[in-house]
Image 1 (tube, rainbow over the protein chains, first blue to last red):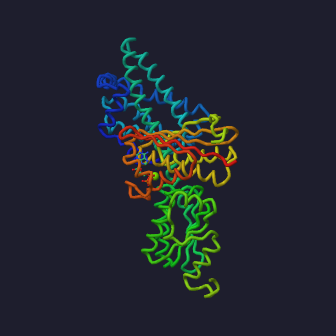
Image 2 (cartoon, each protein chain N blue to C red; image 1 turned 30 degrees about the vertical axis):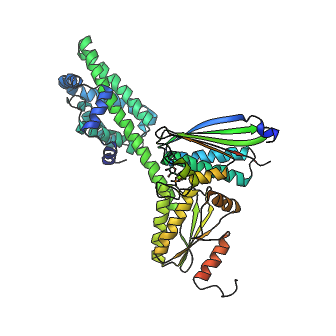
Image 3 (cartoon, rainbow over the protein chains, first blue to last red; image 1 turned 120 degrees about the vertical axis):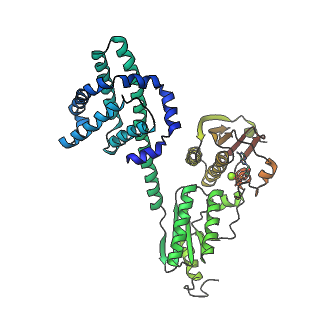
Length: 305
Length: 144
Ligand SMILES: Nc1ncnc2c1ncn2[C@@H]1O[C@H](COP(=O)(O)OP(=O)(O)O)[C@@H](O)[C@H]1O
Ligand SMILES: [Mg+2]
């Protein structure tokens, strides 16, 4: 997921950042305390990041994500900035966006969340060691507690970035499946066939209708055959969809024939009390095609009747 | 009433499913069909309980703002049944009598869900009060 998209999705405005900070209890006091150790952090910046990457690159699983020296150099540079970010004395939307950017970068290279989170644990440990070496015990404890809260805040943003990316993937796949499952087939000149398959939920119903109407106009179709033999449950929602589609298709000057109505579906429709008399219906697809040919003046006249 | 009809319905299995999204509607009705199949319902009876479930659970979502659906496999004197209890905490059905007559809808749709579901099943009960939500209980028995 692109960092800008992730930032967009998490909607990190003042209020949202405030809400998150409250939850993690990141106080202004924490931020001020960390800022007071900025010089210390700057001095130890290289050393902390080197140690972190010793861990990351020392582990075969996480090392695989850093193929060459140039990549390592680049991410180390990013991490140095990230580390100093903890000691800037602020935790506002700009800070949060910066954190999301780092999370998105790891997600983009498809680093598994567990490896990413594992590195955070090491990171915290390094910060603790740094404070303990340089500060009086009480001051070290306080500084570390503040850092812990802020890093937890950061980790949540990283997790949310991963989740948002996963959700996006699902939505994209759904859209792809929808498109795939809305095939409008031209069976003869000016006759289109729409085989409905699967569940017709609201989003798909809209998509199906739009795709169909576009094709009717493009092909100057006269008849549209909707085959519902692949629809597992024909309820009032599906009936409404068929009626609406028929009405819209009619506005474009074409007729609709519904095919693939099984005996079970016929009985169910009648029991529901749905009247489909406004629609031409046929049991078998073959009969619907014959009717469509007649309606477009192509079947031998008088053969029926 | 035949003696077997008077026998108590035994609940063989029971499961509760959330009704929060359109996907949930699909999951609940799919489960209803599975239970009907397992209980040996014929194709018509399977479609009846599945379609009625679809209508009632969607109503709970659309009109009731979501709720919970409970599906039960029943046995009454050797006769197999499937029961749906669908509960929501929505505004309740405003004009129940009219809604049950059919062809009445507040959303500009067909308005045949409630009346149609009632015709599709063997037992049908709506409990609803303004502001106190809606509970629909419906049962379909396998043909002997
Ligand atoms: N669970 C519910 N909560 C509140 N109102 C409901 C509920 N179920 C049905 N209704 C009311 O009954 C009417 C008829 O329902 P239904 O026959 O399913 O038609 P539709 O859903 O198409 O409107 C609805 O328009 C609604 O006003
Ligand atoms: Mg309805």
